[in-house]
Image (cartoon, rainbow, N blue to C red; front, side, top):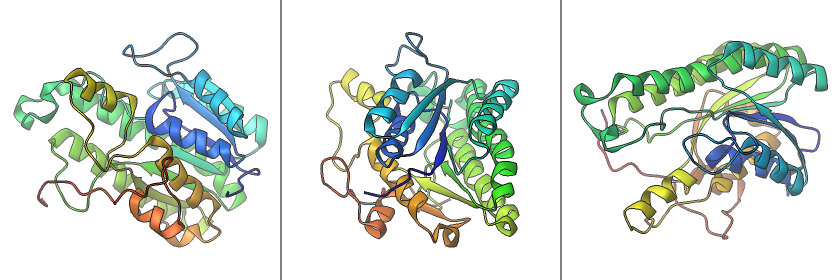
Length: 279
């Protein structure tokens, strides 16, 4: 078990899914974890299960300290208030996980349509509640990390090398997330702050499970839990040489083999392989 008891972390978009899995595993490693999202108490989004209130409880029960903060990451003043609180409470931040992503809201059969048939509001959600939200949190995290000449920023993205991601808005947004974290790595390098990207595989999030259940289909083999991604983030945060990875893009399956961790069922799923061609 890796020890992160001295780590103050922020996981954005942690009401459910990958964000919740990351937060819970950080808690199991002993970290103090701020978890953000719009779903709190009994008020959830899109009738999906999960709130930051519940996630914070899971973090604490796992062994860390979970702190739930209601935050819409498209609201700049709310994000500034969040960072004011973190700085006031702890004086700094060791780990930022940029996981918030609004690009799946309103998901329907049009998601895989050609770009000329895509609703324009999907583009807006992917960039406003995805790329831009990663940028604003990183802007506010950077001064705290630069002051301590240390820190780790992890961008949660998706992809497989140069392969097309199956939808033009999605492909462009995820490429932008990748490039954002690579560019930040370049500019933060003199300060000893690491910025990198992690690619989950086919993850059994609540949304994915619900989608398969709705059509009466079984999940395909090779999927993994959200906690598997969390274990990758924990391994990176505990790695004293993580700065050597700054600017890189890493698949969770590859990190599992490098750091020797498994999924919750003891398996070690293969790195995800997109069934599309390079573009």
